[in-house]
Length: 257
Image (cartoon, rainbow, N blue to C red):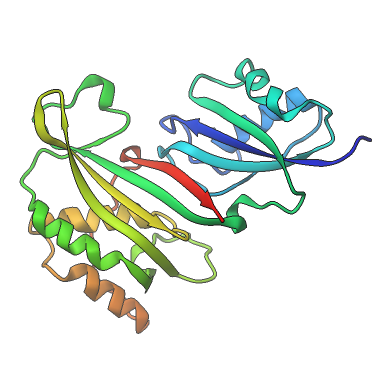
């Protein structure tokens, strides 16, 4: 048996047809497809560890995973070699050897996601996989103001879906802001919600965005975000918004110390 090395991969994927990143029995997942391809290339079973387990339909521009191998294939050759073994919706951008104790989940200090909402009267055909279409009336100023309440160290128990196995629901959010972008001559037609934190709970961002949308359209009152965070710190439940579809969400960046 050869020397054991630890390899870090940067990859991107279109999550449309996957039941999330994490391997699940009898379901198509990014992890399952990636591990199968790596196993064929390296000629031994491979189990990867990811910086974040994206939900069904969620995309990634810069996911980071790591695995151990006894293969002698140089890391710099792995991305190109995987190109012939992976489907078109998963791309490995780079590979490098790291220390044997590298853990992308534990060692990541920050993850940045973006949720995109299309505000135009019609949704462009090339955008339907990557944005949530909502053409109805929304109060952008109010939504931006409410979003700022997420920043800081808070208990996000009211912004997680059932099924979360997290040991603690406290997270430190360093960025939570809306940005409007002009596309194809349409002013402010794309709304982006950017959020960075040391970690996220199950469906947390989608519940955050859904809450902001429900506030923006008048379904929930101003102050809902702060009230939900304060209630959680006292161990109480609070009403928050809908869980928006996964297709509008993308993992943009994973940062390490």
